[in-house]
Length: 622
Image 1 (cartoon, one colour):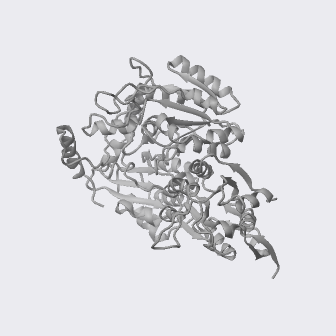
Image 2: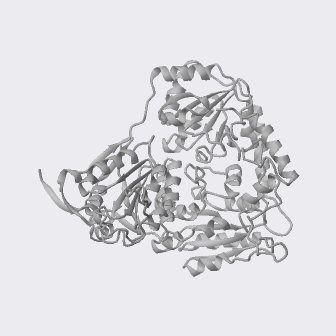
Image 3: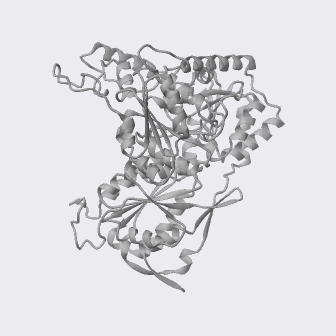
C-alpha cells in the first residue's frame, strides 16, 4: 500500500480539498475553503498546513470566531447546502466562541465543519494555557461543549484516527436529514504529528445526494387524505428551497387551488404576486394566511419543522376536523403535530402527488373570489404600513417599505433577530426565490452582518446583499464588516437604530411590565435604573472607523439619498437609520406562548398571566 507522510493537519486539508458532491446530475466541489483565527492551539498545526497548502482551498481571516461560522453557515444556506466552508480556531475561548454559531447551523439544518483546537492529547504540559480542568473527568475539555449542538462530534487523539473521523464527518455534512454542525476537536500536539497515510485516503470522493422517494403506499395514503379535504392550506418551509421545488410548489398550488402560507425559512418560495401566496403564516403571519389556517381542514406542510412561530404555538388551526400531512426528508420533522408522514424529497413528492391528484380530478373547495379578497385586503394593509407616517421621525415599517421598493428584484436581504424578522415576514415582498435569507430557527443576534458576508460570497456578481440589523444586534457582533472589506465583498448594512432591544421591550410591556432593562438609556440618579435619556450612538462613524462608508438617515429624503449612494459604492457601506421605537407591525390572528409570572406585585402582570392561561387551553397538546 502506497503511503505519504503528512501531519494530521496537512492530511486533513488534503482530504477536504478532494471532496465533491453530486446532485441532480451536477457535480461540484463541496468544501470551498477555510475560515480561521489563529492562536497557540492551532497556529503551528492547522496554521502551518494552511500556509503551505498547494490545493484549491481558500483561507479567509475571520475577526470573531462566532462571526466567521455565521458567514460559513450563511454561505451554505444560500448555496442550498451544496457547498460549505470549514472553520479553524485555537483552544479555549477561541473554540467556545463558535458554540453559539454551531447551534445556529444545527437548528437550521445547515452543514458547517468546525475544527477547534484542543488541549494536548499527551497531557504532558497540562494544565496548558486556556485549559478547562474537570477533576471528575480529565478527558473533558472546553470542546465537549460542542456535543449538544453538533450533529457529529469527534476528538482526534491520534493522527490515524483522522481517517474514520473525516469520513464520518462527510457522511453527516452531506446528509439532508442529519446535517448540521460537525465538530472535529483537534488536540494541538496531534495537529502537528506525522503519520504514513494511505494515498487512497486522498483520492477524489464524490458524495451523492439522492432525492428520497416514499413508498407507493405512502403516496396513496397521502392522496386519499387530500382527496377527502375541502379547505387545505399549504405551509411552505425551508425544505422547498433546499429541494429546489419552488416551481413545483407554484404549479401545485395553482393546479389544485390551494392557498400557501410561508414560514420564515420558506419565504420567497413563491413570488408575493402569485395568486395563491397568502403571505406569512403563524405568530408573525399575515391576516390572509392566518384566517385560512384557522378554517383549514388539512395543513400540508412542505419542508417545515412546524415550530411554535409557524403554528402560533399550536393554536393557529381551529377547525376540529383539521389534520396534518407533512412532507419532509426527515421523519423526525415529519411526525410533528401528529402529522400523516410522507417522508420524501419535497420536489419529487409534489410532482408525484400532483400526478395522482390530477388522475382523481381533485380540486379544493376554496372560493377563488374569497381568496382574492383576502389577498387584496392584506396587500392593502401592507401598503398602509409602507406609507405610514408618524410624528417625530421615521417609522420602522415605512423604512422597510422604502428599502423594499428601492432594491432590485434579485438583490438579497438577510436578518435574524429583533422586531424586524416579524415585520419582514409579514411585509416584505419578494418576487425571486432565495432573495429572502432569514435566520429564524435560532434567531441569533449577530448573525445578520456576518451572514451577509457569506451570502455575498455565494451570490451572483450582480446581486447586492443587504444586512438588515438592529442596533442591539450590531453592537453584539459586527466585526466581519472588516472581513468584507478585506475580501472586497461589498455588503450594505441597513442599521435601524431604535435605542435598544425594543423587540423584547415591546414583548415585555405587552405582558404587563412597565418596561425594564431593554432600552439603551443612561442610569438615572432618581431610581438607580436605566431610565434616563437615550444613549446617542453614531453607528455611521463607527463603520467609517473600520474602513466602510457610513451614512446617517433621519428623514425619508436622507434615507433615499443614502440608499442611492450606497448602491454606487464599491466598498461595504452602513446606513444608520434612526427610527422611532414601537413603530412595528401588530399581530394578525396570531399568538405566541410565553411563561408569564403567575404571581406578581403588578396587577397588570397577573392579568397577563390569566390571559395567557386562557389561550393555552386552546393549544393542541402534542
